[in-house]
View 1 (cartoon, rainbow, N blue to C red):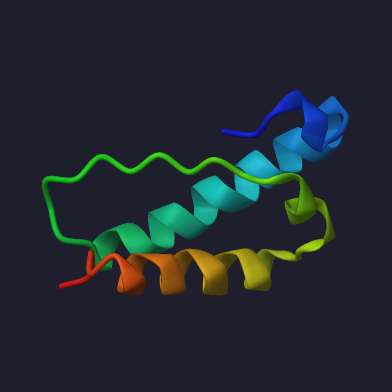
View 2 (view 1 turned 30 degrees about the vertical axis):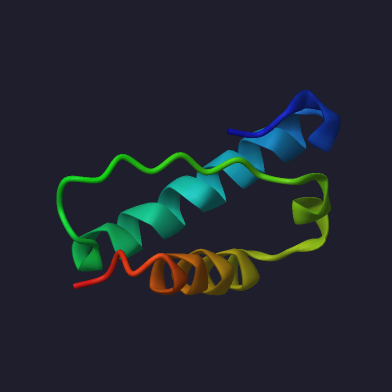
Length: 67
């Protein structure tokens, strides 16, 4: 989820696409049976796709959600 405070529609949609793509790539490694909700903070505007992937993966490791 990306709040309206994050930016205009174009920026929000780009961030949504990046989060969706990153989660689809990491979904194969996750333990089944969990529903995960990602809420993007305002400073995600400065991040690029690879930083988002890295941060999402580190959060999944921290939460012990990988096989």
